[in-house]
Image (cartoon, rainbow, N blue to C red; front, side, top):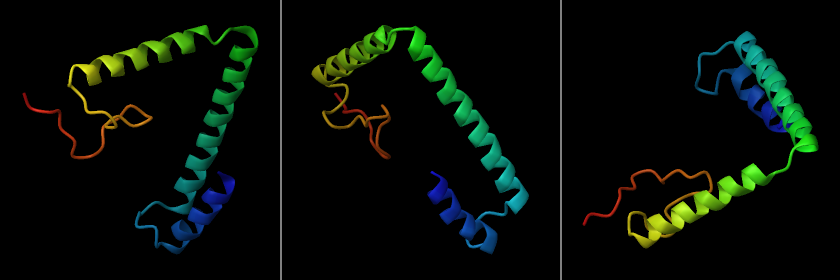
Length: 96
């Protein structure tokens, strides 16, 4: 992440990134995202140290079953749901 951020910073500083954000805005955003990301990871590791992953497993099983039901009912086509659960651009449900 750090390497990709430094690589993109070159475009931001030179003005070729296409945005009108100043270096101060980019620096502030970078610091805020670092702090929030660090806090989220620290919380998750603390949570996993004291809790089981049963809730997450149950959620994933139910979500998978829901996708299978939707595919079986013809409401979504197989392969149309990404890993994030979003549909590709321009996709529409099949007409009946």
